[in-house]
Image (tube, rainbow over all chains, first blue to last red; front, side):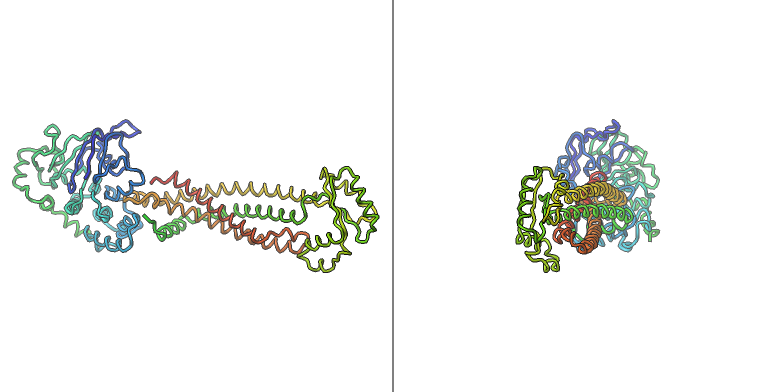
Length: 291
Length: 293
């Protein structure tokens, strides 16, 4: 679904190398966390996928199509396959929830009947069916992010890119957002999420790609947030879980025997989101407050 | 992908309304400048049709008395031929002169009705080697016996033309300066509209709206400003044309200066086209400079 081959990108202003020899392969339906310190190149990774930025070297494929050779007029069609969610929501303040989501379909020329059918459906999916007529200002942060996700997903993109979608949200609300992203992922959409949120990464136990100074230093199936880089730089490291998320210790903890033991007792066969919910029962509380 | 006309219309109207003061300034500037353009063009046509009616190449007309004896006429003819400043002369007798007068005064049936070939003065029409000597040469013949009147139409035409040329240059210069400021005003209006809608534009880019889908409402906004300004100008020019036309009709000698209505229509179409061009150029520059898609 997404393939990077030796991608290098340097911004003209400042000599920082945002991406340096990055090679990646992400299959359809995967859920991937991209982690790393601020300025490590996470956001650049998403930007080159969207062709917001070009690359200096290397090649990128999205859904079987090479995108860095794509002519400019085709870029919008590429972006229709890539839903986008940001830390700051980027909703239009003068439009209602419904209009915000409908806008995404309207501006790519979808007929009115399609909009009338799909928008309520996706609002139902994100749990905002009752709030279609509200303005973004009247919603909580979590709800606003749900609207943004609805807008990104309403066109059923192949890939959902999320740049720190929980960055502005409290932990409980973040869990709710992750539940939603997980549900979207299970419908077959590939999800690529850049994040700083160690709790969430450790809870979800999905593939983790860590970037440092533009290089991939770790690519781990069912990874955690803060693995000591010296432990492994290869894929397929056996699952190591963090502690249960509310404590937040997982973010900094390297895997210990204790953590591994706890992982065993939690049981790897359980779905990540269920574990998430079990670990931090804050989602419903958030929903009560929101109503 | 087809871009829905309804969408573009809605966006354009809401943009114009949101930015209405700026739009008004742009529209009025286009209107005033195009009024000047239209006026200058009509003035030129008016002068041209006046010239066509008077006959452009005749420097000197020597009208004989209607009852002048043939001897006088022959004497004048000889003198004309011997005058070194005169290049050539044509003689219109009673009949030819009558036909010409009938044509010249076709709009004034009263005059035509009292004319007969016998009462119409025969005329010598001459061209000069140096047209600016017309008045000096005219004085030579004014006192000759049998001469009724000496006129030098080309010279008055020339001064009329010179006056209208100066006027046209002044009008066009002001119009060009105003048109340039109209382009800049439209550019700024569109720039402000783009800035006001930067969030929408960002979202549109993100969800994959095509470049033209994003640009088109802004382009149409500029076009509409130019068009409305042009319509204002058309109104002003038409009113002026009707008013001045009515005035000219009162004076027989200026009646031929009235511009035929199909020429007026052509001028108005030209005004509208220029208005549209001004709008499109202004918004195209703004979109190019300030809208990244």
